[in-house]
Image (cartoon, rainbow, N blue to C red):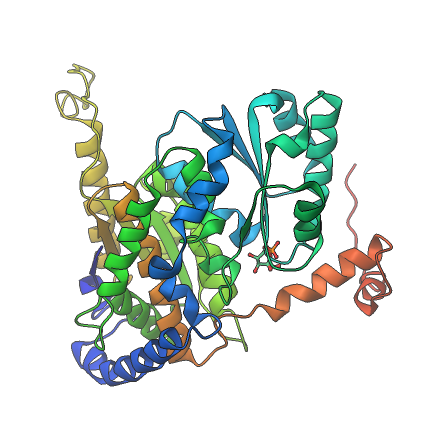
Amino acid sequence: MDVDIGNALDARPGLTEGTLDRLDGRVAAAHDRIARGMADDEFGYASLNLPETADSAAIRAAVEPFGEPEAVLTVGIGGSALGAATLADALESDVDAYFLDNVDPDAVDALLADLPLADVVLNVVSRSGTTAETLANFLVVREAMDAAGVDWTDRTLVTTGEEGNLRRLAETHDLPALDVPEGVPGRFSVLSTVGLAVAALQGHDVEAVLAGGSDGMDALAGSLFESPAYAYGATTYALAERGALTNAFMPYAESLETFAEWFAQLWAESLGKDGLGQTPARALGATDQHSQLQLYRAGPADKLVTLVRPTERADAPIPETDLDGLSYLGGSSLGDLLDAEFAATEASLAAADVPNVRIEIDRVDERSLGELLYGMEAACVLYGELASVSTFTQPAVEWGKKAARGLLGGGDFAEAEAVADKREFRIDGA
Ligand SMILES: O=P(O)(O)OC[C@H]1O[C@](O)(CO)[C@@H](O)[C@@H]1O
């Protein structure tokens, strides 16, 4: 993974090389803190040890009984789904991967109607084992399997914590079960059982993903000038300090669109604390050049754009054409066009003094993805150290959970009562 921060210098907001030099001392101190946390397997910091601590053999052993299924259906949400989905959507496989990470009845019914339930592995993932959406979806899928005459206990893999409903379910029905890694928040768990079981079921090289993570681990150093991940973390932090409170995250590869969704949880849930943080805006190149780019380039000077791409990709020729004004496309290729659009967008932002950072990986394969995912996690941890926030907790999400549970009769919660206090100011339609 390479990071180019050149277009973050002298932008609006922008950094100078002097800023970076002054910041590097704080990066060194932050790295020492991170290194100590990793050495002691401290809560949260343990995430950055996963390339060495993840048990790929246990993952392979757990999925082995399922052979090569037609499909894998993951029921989980947030970090319990997005990492696996990132790898599944980035890599090709003959085994289809589906994810139920929402409780939209239409979507759930439509998916269950299409799935070959007798040849699906039901991969239920929840660290806590109490997440309402995950447990509700599991109960719905289990009933659908029952109704289809499928023995769900033959088709289900559980990944969960030591305690909780899912652990008890696995023990009661003797289900294959994987442990979520200790001390690793869900959004940092892609390089573990949580993110890699689907990859193993899809026949991907799990060890190569972890080797890429190790590449990222080896690239950590006590200076932003020596570590791409820290260069990204320090630059995004310093730009936020200067007003870039939105980070438009824009991969130029369809295979990395879900990666942007994974990044959004990592960045928002880790750094959105104490009135601080940087809003990740998910975008896709070249598509969003025809939508959001207008705002990025000509809107408030309150954002940076992160451009991500593989330097090697498949290609497809563009046939010759005599269409007026379009003959220049003929004989070129879609890859050439995408690369030209990437360079043009990058230059367009620079010409408007909009800070932008380029992240490049060799190609979208297991090893490069492992390094990229690890690099973003390390960048996030560094940013959190520099911002002095509690990177690995997410207390703000609990209020809504209690309110929803109270509304459904799951207990007496003041949050649920507060829902009734909604201030009304309605403008009704026809
Ligand atoms: O794995 P669990 O415990 O079901 O949690 C799922 C997701 O919900 C959160 O806890 C937030 O509610 C995320 O941090 C986590 O990734």
